[in-house]
Image (cartoon, rainbow, N blue to C red; front, side, top):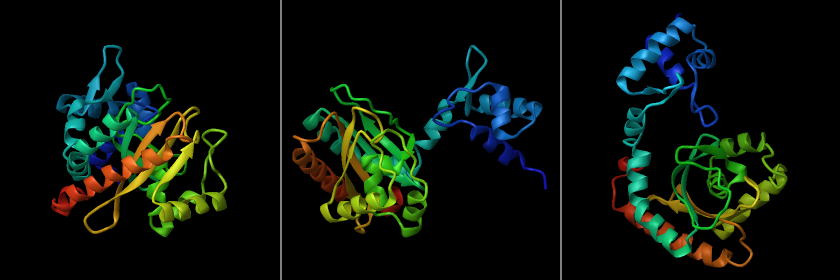
Length: 250
């Protein structure tokens, strides 16, 4: 059965990812598995609608209209709205880079980020997906993820830096401590020179809905203070979520 027009258009949009934010027409067609003529026709229609934007050099990027549409998704519109004032309070208290993230399959998806004053190498971007086992927010979400998700992640622990934990038994012990202590930490496991600490954000039903994290150069002196600040913010987000219909943020 031949692919529908919709599936081919989606395949063309799916050619873009965090490592391929700008693509030529031929690259789009190749990554989508489409003939060049088909890619050309669909790219023109998508650009006319606003889903793609053609740059002066001829490359295509994702269009603003897709961003506007994505912002209507409940996981962003509701959860980000509920968390926003607490993220700004947390940023004001710590002046550090603050993250709000959720689990997307076996990856951590960053919904919001406020950049800190201290120069720390941070690779996350709003909308980006990173490995769960190498990030603070990811470890929190992995600790409370279903068993099959945890097993899948443990089966493919890739090394990002020399400090990334790739031993399943060691990571499992960390996840056990996350559930017991209520927070997760990383030490240069995603990028050199960056450490992080994160806590769970629970919904009105008590389940973990998201993770809230901070990235700093060093955790040795500030960990207790940062954990306390994160937990206060997380509790505030939970109270706000409790006053909202679950359909607005789940």
